[in-house]
Structures are given as structure tokens and as C-alpha cells.
Length: 447
Image 1 (cartoon, one colour):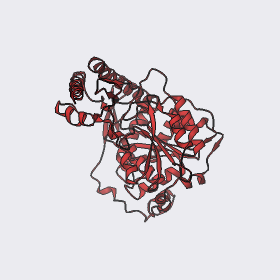
Image 2 (tube, rainbow, N blue to C red; image 1 turned 120 degrees about the vertical axis):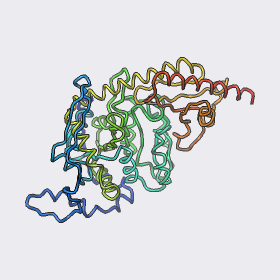
Image 3 (tube, helix red, strand yellow; image 1 turned 45 degrees about the vertical axis):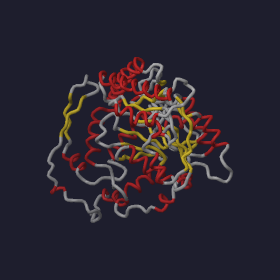
């Protein structure tokens, strides 16, 4: 885990973020009911406020579960919600998240990223990180705005920006992360009179789809550009804890900005989907309070809150583990995926050498590889029909790279996920893909 870094020279004031907020965020009124929830805890106050259902009508009387302990050789440990915890889990809760889970997450961000608690930043719990990213985009981006997106980019955010009719400015990436020279050139040559982008979206660890992990040097350069050109970094980091590279893990943007002259330009998104359970739908955002407040106001008028019951279950598990137990669990998970990566790598080496090129990922669960569909390697192929039609006909399903490009241009790249399959299925899938490529090369040679 990252040690605390240099203290920031200054913290950006709350009013700094006003210009970053979208018109929707500025005009959204606080929930007249949820904004008063905290007052219910006032001693002696009788609340006639919320239409909460009477817990006497709830049929649930107890809840217990078992979980493998990361610090006891995988031994199962029984955990049970006490009466107060169960009552809390069965009732409406705070918009930003249950207090004890938020408190645990605040401590985790200090443990993992060196971010000590202060008045400038906070956290919010969401129904998965995608929920929070969508709300952040809505809070920061107006229809027609220009936005910076790494390219290739996670396909899940393309519709968000598309629905706002944004001009998605693609920032080139390679196996080392965002190409900062490309980003600098884009910003320094920005058309006069056209507002510069307010946000940059990036997945810096085990990127979906490319599997790339941004180097320390690239991260520092991007942070410098954020300061020089005044934009917010949306750090979507669901694979942070799935890092299995040989070098020590690089600090996050959230940690590194503590070395900047000013702090407050990173809005970070974490997910428990890849390390605890995808089905519990728990993610969390960390960043400047004004931005988190805008997200919370959206939540208060949409889904009200993330499920109290899943939050209390997750908290019970995390509190039982502690931060060291959590660290050990994530290290176990990353080791698991490293083995999966190695199995896939061996199959690629065996069947696709000379037919594709790739850089092995150091985090996450994806391989991004370029199909060599022509005898001449200088001739760029198109993976679209090859993967969507020919590969499916031969019994293998993957994603053509075009779905990860905001402008949908053709590309020879393919994304393959290696998280679920066993070794024999991986080998068979890549063997089938080999024949697909061979057939495509033959067809291109005669056309």
C-alpha cells in the first residue's frame, strides 16, 4: 500500500468547483426530506419527518453469513449482524452511505493512498462505481461540452458522453498509459474561443479494454497538465487491487496529487465488484466535497441511496478483516488473476505467435491484441466482421476493438477477458481464433 506522501501546499477552495458544475447540478435542489435526516439524531427531538416503514412489519429477524478469512488460511468464519445492525440494514439510510461504512472507507483511503482525513474531501457509496461515474458526469458535463477520454476507452462511458452530445476528444494511449505528449499537444493547440474540456476520463490500472497500467512518469505528467489546463481527472480504478506486475504498484492519481502545488483535481472511483462480489453492487467515490455533494444530490432524487442491507453486510465483513486483512485478501485475488493471465499468455504464445501482437497486462482481466489479418504487417486490418461473424461461427466470442473507440473507427484490435475460463477452454478458444485469423488472411490474399 502507498505510504502518505508530501503534504499539499494548498487545498483548492470550495468555490473553485462552481465553474465545473453542470447546469443540471447547479439547478438541482436538495431533497426537502433527506437533507433533514441528520436532525433526527438530535437528542430530545421528536421526528415526524420521513415516511419510513415501521420495522415491526419487517419479516426478517436475523441474518448471518460465512466468509473465508484472508488471514486464517481461507478458514470460514461465521459473522452475524447484531440487532442494531440488522435494523439499520433493513431501513432507509443516509444518501452518501451508512456512517460506519463511509468511515471505514475514509480509513482505507488513508491506508491505501495516504489521504488523511480533512475538511476538503469525503467519500460517497454508490450502487457500483458505474452509478457514481454516471452521476459525476451528469454533475460536471453540460450538453455539447468537449471531454477528454483516453482511447481506447471503457465502453460503458461512451454512451454517457454520447447522450450529452459531447465532443469526445480521444487521447492516445499505449502500454504505458496516456501519451502525455499527445494530451499536451491537444490542449496547447486548442481552438481559440472554444472552451477547453473540464474533465479527463481514465482507467489507470489494468484498463478495460487495453489492460494497460499507467507508469508513474505518465501519471505525474497528466497531473501537471491538469493543473496547467485546469481540468478534473476522473480516475476510474476498479482494477487497482488487481495489480500483479513485478514492479511495486504505482501510486494512484488520488495519492500523487498530494505532491502537487494544489490538491483537489482528482475525483476517484473504486469498486468492490472485482474483489468482494459483483452482485453486492458497492462502489465508492472519493474527492472534493463540492463534487461529492453534487453526486449525493443526484442520488437523493434518483435512487435515494445504495441498499442499506448490502452496505451493512459489506461493512461487517470489512470490519472483521481490518485493513491488513483486506490487503491480504486483495493480494490473494491479484495472485489468482496473475495465474489466469499466465494461462492465457501461454495459449497466445502457442497459437497466435505471428498472427497477432500484444503486450501482456500487469493488472485486471483483459488481453488487448492486434490481429495480423494480412501478410503485409503494414496493412491495417479490421477485426469487426472477423470477430462478430467468423469467430462466432467457429465457436468463440470476443469483442472487436471498435466498440471501445468513441468515433467507432475500424481497428484490428480485439478485447478478450480471461477471468472465468479454465486452462483447457482458454487453449481451445485461442486455437479456434487462430483458424479464424488464418482464414481471414487467406481471404485477404485472394481479394
